[in-house]
Length: 462
Ligand code: NAP
Ligand code: MG
Image (tube, rainbow, N blue to C red; front, side, top):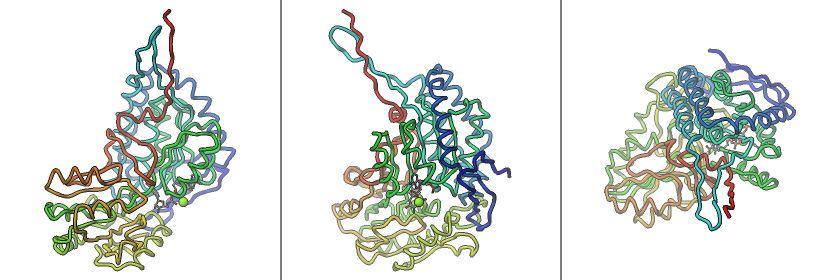
């Protein structure tokens, strides 16, 4: 497989590792500060023409970009398996998600309407004006989808984009940059800049030509970026951590709840901000649920990510594995899943029983294949426990009582809830966090609005 080449070198070299084996798969040149400033300058220079392009022409270029991604689905998916250890079925879905998101927002340029507001003595109209250069900072857990959720609506709204992939997972983003160029996206309109967060990412925050930062990653780095953006009142979207609750009531379909829980907690080896990493089970069915859960966790397939049957692969890095292992070492483990290979950065799916509601395994975002299970008594208890966290990203509710489902869905302080399912993110519905899980929303019909500012124009007719 061809490893995309980087035109940069000023920030040194990153050795890209296959997390399933621990072996190096290639080297990527990283951008330094001067190269980053050059790329931002090219994005700023490309902006006036991209903004002025006829809506239908911008739409067509986005469809061409989507077609190029579609034609390279297998290659992108294979690169992601190699670089990130994602299961092949997930990686194919992820490449398809980029295509779908581009296609969805390719319909936005001709539909990004303003309003006509009744006024006396004239006509009042609003415009959604693009911002300029948008800087997108992507984490390593979903390199393709999170990139696309930023760049597709940003480009559709008439902005140019500079994008920094995570240093450990740059390959698919770099390939997407090449595919954009091959599809005819003009030079400077979409530039992928591999580099360090402290260099390239920080420059997006401090460079005055970058008018918006879209950040997904840890809450601590997100808070620093928010502080930095304040200096220029820079627009900002944050998608941060989570510690989401999966609430299982006694009247639920317990078999369905137990069968689906491993996927909701261990997909992508639990390296998912939406992971349902806390399971709350009503006390009268707690023992039975744990028995069913043990069965489904044991059956969860953890194997070579190239195997189409694989449901979980390795952790991303030795460092991330060690961080997760330290939580497991401090926890009461009820049971674990499949045995895992010794090479690479593997962990077995782990079910922990917190000693109290203050147990770190219950309160901290672990970002690995660890789920904690606790009993609750009443609906009020469940909502209180679910909300007893600084986070509020996702969550699930299993019950056959529709009134309860809606009451609890309204009661949980979280941006994305699913009832009797663990719905993943849909690109045509809004996604984002309450509380310290984030700021702003991505995806859905309104995403282009968050890549533009509203301008109001009054025209006197008298
Ligand atoms: P992170 O440091 O927040 O990294 C996310 C992105 O931000 C990467 O591209 C990173 O670049 C960049 N970055 C780092 N420092 C920066 C800075 N000062 N200015 C601008 N950009 C900066 O996350 P991590 O260290 O990789 O992971 C640590 C924890 O974060 C995880 O255990 C998990 O809890 C959480 N996390 C959450 C999500 C999510 O989806 N919400 C995703 C990933 C991680 P480089 O890493 O390339 O230097
Ligand atoms: Mg970091």
